[in-house]
Image 1: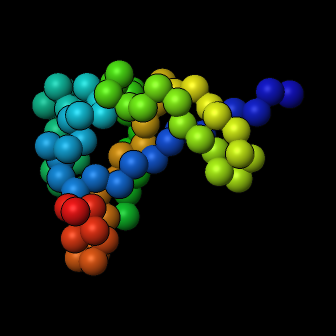
Image 2: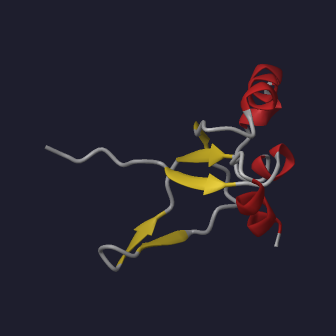
Image 3: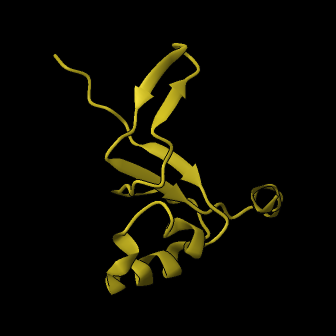
Length: 87
C-alpha cells in the first residue's frame, strides 16, 4: 500500500512565529488552545501556508520532497532550546 506521509514539524519560539506557517490561528479557539498548552510537550498539526520552503530535503534518503499540506507546530518548554530558536 501507499505510505502515509507524516507532517513536517517545526520548532517555534512563540505563537506569533507560528502564524507565519499556518492560518489555523485565525480561529480564536485554536489560538486559545495553543496559548493554554504551549510551551509544552505537544505538537499541533495544522494546514500549512505558502511561507514554507517549496522543497524540503530528506537527509536520510538524500531525496528532495515537495512541500506538504500540513505542518506540525511545537514550542518547546526548555530554556536552552528556546534561546537557540531566538538566534
